[in-house]
Length: 380
Ligand SMILES: CC(=O)SCCNC(=O)CCNC(=O)[C@H](O)C(C)(C)COP(=O)(O)OP(=O)(O)OC[C@H]1O[C@@H](n2cnc3c(N)ncnc32)[C@H](O)[C@@H]1OP(=O)(O)O
Ligand SMILES: O=C([O-])CC(=O)C(=O)O
Image (cartoon, rainbow, N blue to C red; front, side):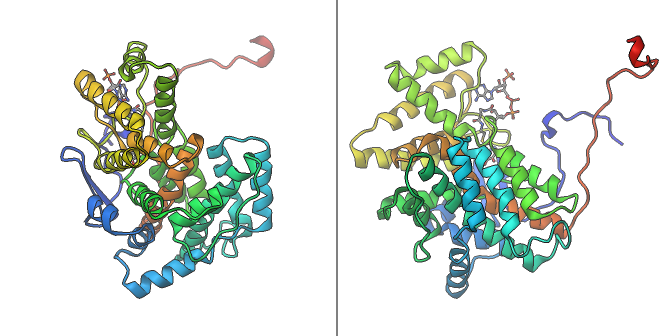
């Protein structure tokens, strides 16, 4: 047994996976052998979900049937609607709300069987379709209720991406918005053993159910060092704008105070994240279309400064922020939108875990007291 301590498990190999490959020095990301650039430009989110769960890209017929199955699962049970309404009326944080909502899905899932038969492949695919299809409906309803509007029922004729924007805004998105959002979902779908995926795997490794694994993952994604960074990026950009300061001023101050700059740095990439490149192009294109380059220009200035001063490059969260903002999406649902996409990757890794399971249980080096004499309560 090795006694070498690996803080944060950096570089530790704990599993074999066929899902995504990352070359952190070359800035390369691949899902099942396909580059992220090819998938982002040519495949829909539904195609990518199929690829992750079934191992290969679907044929046209397979995709059509998968889309129909997914779309048919968009409606929420009345009980889930009630939970969503209650959380929205309590003004719960959207990620905290999503954590509760995903857990609540299991109460109305015909295949949820307590903690029995958790590795039944066919039941798990049905649960996976339901969880993935219902998250956008619940999130859009949550957003609309808390802003004082009625929820909008899902439509089966729209894509996963377009249907979410339709339910959020009560208006069908134009082609540019639907395609941009679909591409953002593709880019966020999987990323090796990131913290939330690992958390889903640890949970699944006890042979508990898929709802528990996804609920763990939602809670893990919410933190500011992980998925929570995308909303913090936008808060930083807005603060810079409102205070009418130079974008670098905010960063200089943050670094002087020893704070992290959201959207920069990554455990695996030593160069610019390939997804940040694609999202940066989207942010720029949206700025050009609106005739307002403010958010993109501010982001580029920050990227250049941190690159020169700290040698840090943007991660996926940096340019998704200004992209979503220019699409009119409320800032505090950026992280739930990340979850809406990453759920496909979480589930794919849980399937791999179930297929070759061993309980995940590392250990800590004990550095506490060893020879204490017990003192009865009354004598302490
Ligand atoms: C989808 C995702 O989860 S992508 C990541 C999203 N998170 C963020 O954007 C939050 C900001 N980034 C960070 O905090 C980090 O880069 C992480 C958490 C992503 C990666 O952390 P780790 O791999 O553990 O790197 P670690 O924390 O050891 O940082 C290494 C060095 O870079 C510095 N550093 C890393 N990221 C940043 C940052 N964003 N701002 C300022 N300094 C940073 C650290 O201070 C540290 O410097 P030091 O060695 O002088 O102390
Ligand atoms: O991989 C990671 O550590 C963080 C993550 O989820 C991503 O970059 O998409």
